[in-house]
Length: 187
Image 1 (cartoon, rainbow, N blue to C red):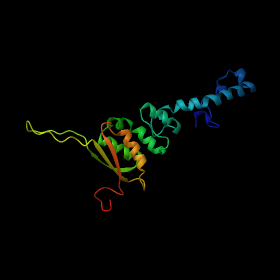
Image 2 (cartoon, one colour):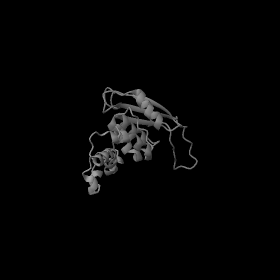
Image 3 (cartoon, one colour):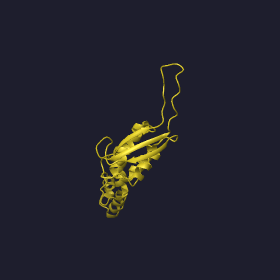
Image 4 (cartoon, helix red, strand yellow):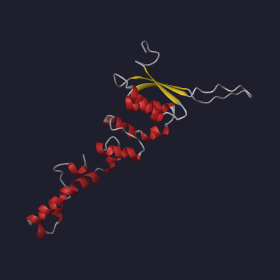
C-alpha cells in the first residue's frame, strides 16, 4: 500500500478555503482545487506522521523494508511482520553482538523463536605459568543446538540459514535439532 492509495483521505488544509473571495463561489475553481487536495492529502498525512516512519513498531509495513536497509538489516519478507519489526528495532544491538555466541543466540531466538545452546570449538587459552605447554588446536567447529520454544516444531533449514549468515567464516557450523532443552528428560 502506498500513502496515495487511501480513498477519501481529507486534506487538513483545503486549498479552496485559501482562495480569494472572487474564487470562493466559483464552482470550477473549487472542483479544481479539490483535485489538488486529493493529490496533496497523502503528502500532508505522511509529513504529519513522519516521526512514526522511523520507529520500527509504528512504521507502515511497506516502509519497513526500506527502514531495514537504513540500519543494514536483511529482514526476509517471508518472516512474520512482528519478527521483521523486532529485527529492525533491535538492529543496533544485533550488530553489536554479531559474530559472538550471544549475537547468534539472540538472532535465533528473535527470528525463529527457538531455544539455543552453542558449543564453541574456537577460542583462546592462557596460562599463569611461564613456558606452559600450548593448548591443543581448537576444533574449528561451532555446534548449535536448538529446540522449539515459540513454535511447535523447528525448521532445520531456517536455522541453518540464520546460522550460516551469522557464523564466523573461520568456523564450520553444525546444527542439531532437539525435542526440548538439553538436560531435560526426553531431549
